[in-house]
Structure formats: C-alpha cells, structure tokens
Length: 505
Image (cartoon, rainbow, N blue to C red; front, side, top):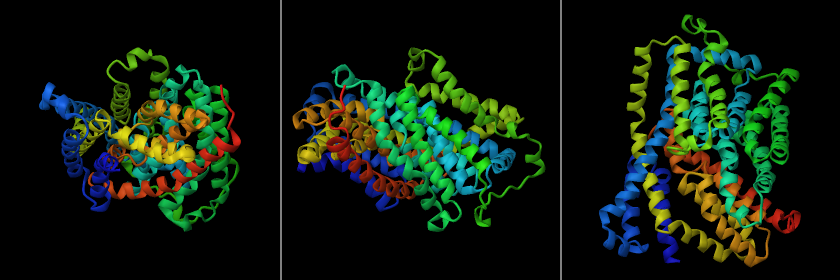
C-alpha cells in the first residue's frame, strides 16, 4: 500500500497544487518534476542503475525528453493561437460569426457544433492535441468564456481520442492483442464505439449544462435529442462499416453535415440571451465569408489531405506531432495572407504569441518529465497492478479507470493502450473474461483521461490565453470526467458479463 501511495504521489502533488491551491502550472510543474526525480531515486529501483551510469546522465535523459516533447506540443498550440489573434486583430472573426449565424444564431448550438462535432473531426484528421488547440480559440472567438472554451474543447476531445489520428490510438494501441491472435483492429474499434456511444449521447447536454446551467436547455430539447442520437448512430456506422480509421474523422464530418441539414429543416426560436451577437465593422466588412474562414478551411482540408496522402514513414520521421505542427503553421501563414495581413504584422503576431505562450512550454515540459520518470521507474505500472489486484471480478470496470490514469499521466490514449494492453490480456485470461470488452474499457477510459491530463489542460489554457488558470479549467473537466467515467465503467461490466461475454475473434 505504501508503495502505491508513493507511486501516486506525483499526481497528487499536481492535483493539490493546481486544483486545491489554484497555483499556476508554471510553478507546480517544475516542483513536481523535482519531487518525482527524488522519489524515483529513493524508492523506485533507479538508485543502483544511476550509480552505475551516472545520476546526471540518467535524470538528464528524462529532462531532455520532457523538454523536447514539450517544445513539440508548444509548437502545436503556438500556430493555433496565432490564428486566433489574426482573426481578432483583423476583425474577420465578426464575419465568421455572421456566417455561422446563417446556419444557426443560437450560441448553444454553435457550442456543440464546434466543441463536439468539429473537435471529433479534427481528432480523426490529426489527433496529437490539435482538436483542443484549434477548437478552443474558435469558441473564444465566438464569445464563449476562455476558461469554459478550453474545458469544452477538452471534453469534446475526451469522448473521441480512441480514434485519434485516423484511428491510431485503437489500431496502434491494440496491436499487441492483434499480434497475440485474440483480436483484430476492426473488432477493437467496434467494441470501443459501443462504449463511446454513451459519451456521445451525454456530451451535448453536459456541455450546455456546464456553460449555461439548467436554463440553457430552454427551447433546445429538439436539437439536443437529434445531436445525442444521430452522432452515436454515425459512430457505429463508421467503425463497423468503414473501420477504426474513420471512427472520428468520418463521424465528425458526417455529423456536422447532418446537424446543418437538421437546422435548415427545423427552425428553433432562440431566446434573445442566447443569440449570437455580430458587430460588423468597416474592417470586418472588407472580407467575404470564405475569406474570413480561410485559416480554418485550410486546417480542415490540410490535415486530412496530408494525413492520408503522405507516406507514414515520412509523417513519423521526426515524431508524429511534428507534421501536425507544420501543417498548422502553414495554415496560419497562408490564412493570414488570404486575410491580407502584412508580412510585418504577421510576424509581429507570431512574436507576441510566442512571448505569451512561453510559460506554457516550461509547464508542459516539466510535466512531461514527471510522466517520463513515472513511466521509466515503473510507478504507472505499480498503480495499475495494484488496482488490478484488488479488483477481482470487477476488473472490467477497473480497466476503465486504469486507462484513464494512464492517459492522465502520459497525455495520450495511445500511450495508455500500449502500456496496459499486455496486462489486460493476462488479467482477462486469469479471470476467464472477454479481453475485447476489457481492452475497450481501458481504451475508452484512456480517451476520457485526456480531458483531465494536466499537459492537455495547460496546452488548452495557453491557446485561449488564460495561462495561470489551469486549475479553473481542470475543475470543469473533472466534473465531466467523474460524471462520465462511472457510465463507462458500468457499461463495460454489462458488456463483459451480459451483452458480449463470448464475442471473440
């Protein structure tokens, strides 16, 4: 038990600092990295290895990896913030509001269109944190409070990262089970979808409640019912017919089209307090609607085109996230040129955004050091194995929580799946249970874990310009996480013991 507490302590330090004391991540992150390094040496089997290979060298590798990967994430949120500032500085955002009002003038529906469906599409197109980075600033530009914008983007991303980057989280994360002959990639994707349908059903209403409270449901029940039922049906279609590669990409694109069609056919009376306000100025009026949307159109087209045309070997040459960064930077540049921004003004925006976001790099890098230390020293596995040991027959439910913990620490559903797939197979065999449902539980739990992962929260906070308010964002996303995680745990138990006990390869 003591070992489990020590293994968990770096996470507790981060949570207490950021949520309990509302401290900025730029202070909590570095402190947590130093603490993790100390207990790694004292309690987690690195002491002898460090004596042989040199303390500075071993710890230095973790810090170097944290800084390197942190800079990659920084280069993801940087261009997204540049796009936001460009749209706001030019006034083009008012034209975007006007265009969206042509589909619906209801801010609550716009919240779902961007915070859920657009996020789902972006997750399938690229993953790697791009959905929250792009959608968060978009929501801010539409008039949503920055803290709430970041939280909504993270929640929208949390119900779809099992299919991140053209299904990579499920395909790559479940590869071990495929190699062992107990599953196929498509079966893993199908079972994950059967769990995620509950998240898709709940998410629209949950988002409205978090932003507007109970009063936000006024005159909205018809659209909420449509969004809550049509999107899960589309998810089942894309994963069962097309395959896991299209679990998010196809679901997001088709669901956006279906929502647009529904809103054209069914008219709602939007209460005045929820109508989108548009203030066109001489500056914003100079743009056409397509011109104002240019940065986002380039992103929507560029990410999937590059993802599905460039050879995988080239995409991953410098790390998966680098190609996403490159596309976003190019989109921010060419989008600014289409908006007729002077080159000197564009580079001024780039420089100002760098200065604003740099503290986020310190925070993200240090928390990645914590993740690296916890992974290499075995702290993560100790926590997972302890949970598995005490679970017994409720292991399927515990697998959801294990997946969430893995993603919370590593920042990726893929990393969580790769780490725990072998353990889930052994547990399923020992308990004579269906490994497909257990892995799906862990896979979807890992997806939910992304919405509360400190690194993701900090990145989202940076892109909406509220560095230092990460604790406020986490309070929102934790509410969603603790609402959804029991639903997934119960569903996984029911699927394992009642609905799909014998559904195997």
